[in-house]
Length: 280
Image 1 (cartoon, helix red, strand yellow):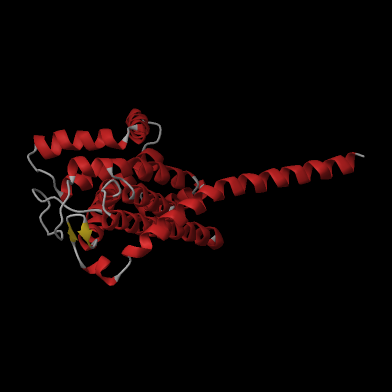
Image 2 (cartoon, rainbow, N blue to C red):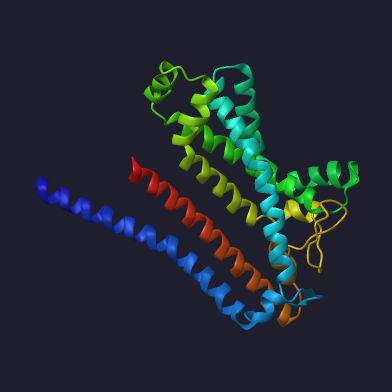
């Protein structure tokens, strides 16, 4: 009797788990179908070679601008976040400064992105007089990504066996050498995963860029300030509300490109984690 009841409960739980999986998959598949089906009319060679003209044209300026501003934002966030994570996780984890960094990181992670965008608008666009620009947008994205890099770095370092540190120090290596050549190298997959997570979040942000990067129909140049820049999320946010079929198609096409980029980044992060586990 007890064996039969356990089998019944097992099947009930498996059925509930399958049902929950289906409930999650249905809206995801529906969203993908909606975006792909509406983006098909806009998919062409010109989509990637022409700039946006009014509510038509292509997305070349937005695609290049997205890589430009997001890439610069990650270049700012990654070293700052990794160094802060190394400090709070390895150099001086119990200090008051480390506690303050953790608290500040948690607070920053909970700040709405639109607030960060408005902060960037007041301090960078107006305060420093940069105007809508690539650098202002990149700094706003960096502020959003830094908490994820800090936390992932600290977590990855905490999983490194203490014996590796002790062995390195026993062989005469300094603490700095131990950190950069032993513990950080061992924690590298987790650190890279955190950077990729910050990258995927930055790719999908709109609000902070509206306040800092502005918008431009032209291809981005090398000027970091006083030069607005195009990006894909602006096309999604703006063109979907336009009463023109061409504008709506561009919005869905931009959404599809964003989905593809985010999927690529997340798959890369999973592969890095899987390879690190296999290596161990």
